[in-house]
Length: 225
Image (tube, rainbow, N blue to C red; front, top):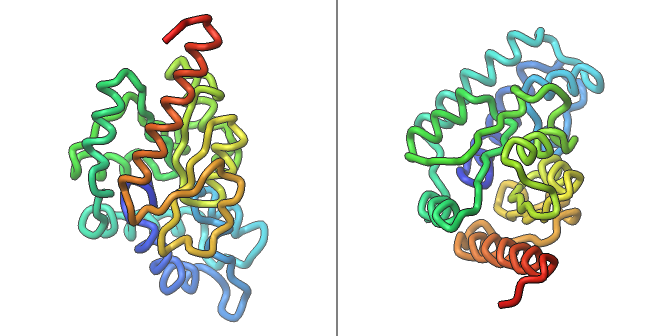
């Protein structure tokens, strides 16, 4: 969702860099590169910081700060990727199940879904998965099982290094989107990288990869055109 469907990472990166991390880490201590934590569930971000850095607040206060920030970001600021609502509907109408697999918690996701009138076959927040979130592949693997799919017939779209690694490790064909907020992020593990500033290129990449998978499945089943 973040950085793909909506431009929330532009706001999260500014908030983390300018407000959240300075407030929760010891003054003068080292701070993480944002690529280290982008794409992770925020409860796991705290655990990551606690292991490697010097947080000065407890986990509950940390998560409350993120929740407060999220209210403004998702409720007022973010914009939907142009054409995304129609493209999701197009895929579903063509019989392609579409899941929203996100490190954001369900209440943040529902704000976006309600605000932009989106529909998915499955919403899979990392907080509801019993296991580690991105960059581990488990949340993708669980979503695929719930949809009755298999990894080599799945396509994932991601924007963070952690998200790309999770998708690739699950076995899904992985499309990474490049934007201002991740201009220097290592997305090299993805199968292809497209420009989010050109939404049609994102949709075309998904259409082509989905078509290729369907043709491959049809060929393996002995079907002719």
